[in-house]
Length: 303
Image (tube, rainbow, N blue to C red):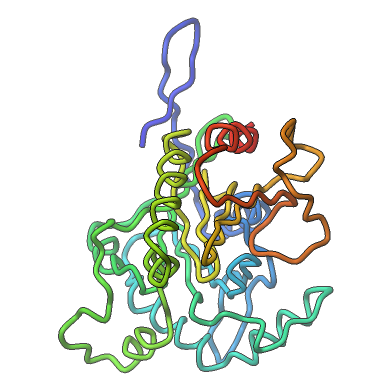
């Protein structure tokens, strides 16, 4: 990806300022972890069973642990290390919870964690085609993020998207690795059908109308589907959440209640009320009567 800056109506390509050490990547990423990923920082250099994890993080939305590893070179196997570390997490769940509780002000219980959403993120300036292909399984729980530094203090972070047609690891006819077999059994990938499978045709149609309309608001919108919600995100930040019920859809906007201009009064104040997703604004929809108006509310989250 090429980046430019404007100078006197002309475009000048930015010059990359390569990272010299993996530690530089780690320091920058950890210092800006929430901004880059929305994850909570737990521990740097977390050691467990003679394995040293670069960064241990926690995803507060999916309620799952995330391991982050930093690489400056490309001559390593992301699939081997990724599978090994995911199995390490699944084998020693209690150790990860203890580490969380020792470093956070709140206490986490075993049942609070959704282990099916465990994942590992590799962060590197670039990845080989083989590394991309070997992790292109929708339910493998291994992600590749590219990070580059440019002169002038500019940094780009690009999480590589898996192909929409990426197969399930379960579709591989013969899985000889016991570690991969365990991951295939425990790690889950949720899709729209997970939320719509038992819903009526009316709710399906209602969801599709709102989904397509929201995606048309910005070319940067992407679906982020989790166990308990479907989110619409831009730059890895969830802005809108859908909780699909039997006869209605609850929409949550990632804004404080007093930040939304709502002259019709459709937004309910959820401040202090437990619900799926972030933000204090809830809208309940049963039809498309207020579709355009609700889209105007959603546009406010883009500002």
